[in-house]
Image 1 (cartoon, rainbow, N blue to C red):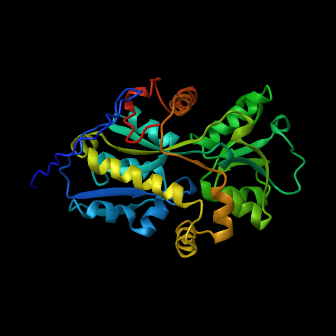
Image 2: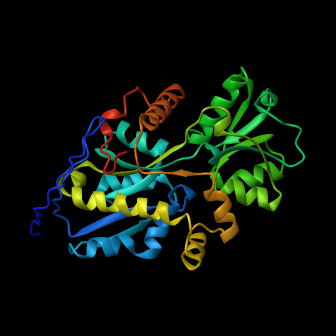
Length: 321
């Protein structure tokens, strides 16, 4: 593959505030970028950009092809990045830090959102549970090791309780409705868009969110370190088109909005309601790094990770404040 170099020099150098500075080098060598995406409302701006064809358009003048890899969750996306099948992907906080802990050479090149309101504690509509304090002695279900698990831990602490005060039930994300409707558990923690689907169906009601206990709910855009180093131009353009998607959400095109809703298996009204719970942004702030470090500490506390580390050196923001 022939190396392609551009002689463009940015007029303003991007000085990195964190471990790695955003590159001012507009070089690139790849003729294809493989982008991993998953149907989460945390990544609505990327779906919007995808449906608009903005990334393809922006990279076409450089002869770079865009290939989209669809996944249902973060772990298989990490495997794709590790194997080199994907170059850039969008994932939640647990997959972001777990990949680094496993030895993957990834970098966080942009934020996608903070979303404390998107992580919810649910109960059946007729439940007497009204707050985290009412969870003592109850059966509480979630995907163990997920951000929703962290939500439960933080909610319990906010009520001067611990995990020892509840019976934690491990389930898959798709089982939330079943265990609540069949009264197999007293409460369940899960994330959007499942929350809105269940509430709209009358299968659940919301008791608490991440905002009630200091859960930031960081989601981000990660990339293979080698890809970023060899292709800073491509990496930056993908991040910029995500930013363009954020701006477009202020007045979205109706046809494109309907397509994005279909991508997430929602109707347009549900998508509007769900996306309002996400603070979409690309700039990585110190609070986001703190949020990822909090996730690391939580995973260490439950034995998913063996040791703690500081996430700061793994930030290489393509767009800064």
